[in-house]
Length: 67
Image 1 (tube, rainbow, N blue to C red):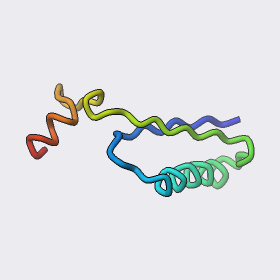
Image 2: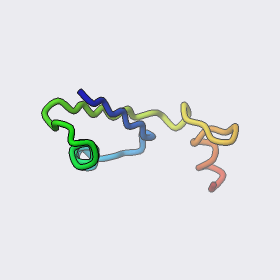
Image 3: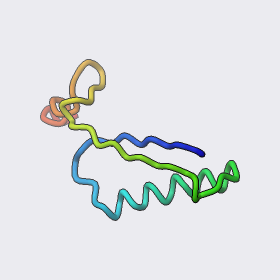
C-alpha cells in the first residue's frame, strides 16, 4: 500500500487542484511502479507560510520582501 505525502503552503490551492495532485500522484505510482490505485494513499498537508522556512526566513517574510 503506497503512501504519498504532499506538503504545500496554504495559499489557496483549490479543491480541483488538490484532486489533480491526488490523481496525478496515484497515476505516477501506477505507471512507474505498477502499484494498485485502489490501495494507494495520497495525503496533502497545507502548511501556513509562517511555518515554512527557506534560507533562515519564513515564506511569509520572503514574500513580503518580494523574494
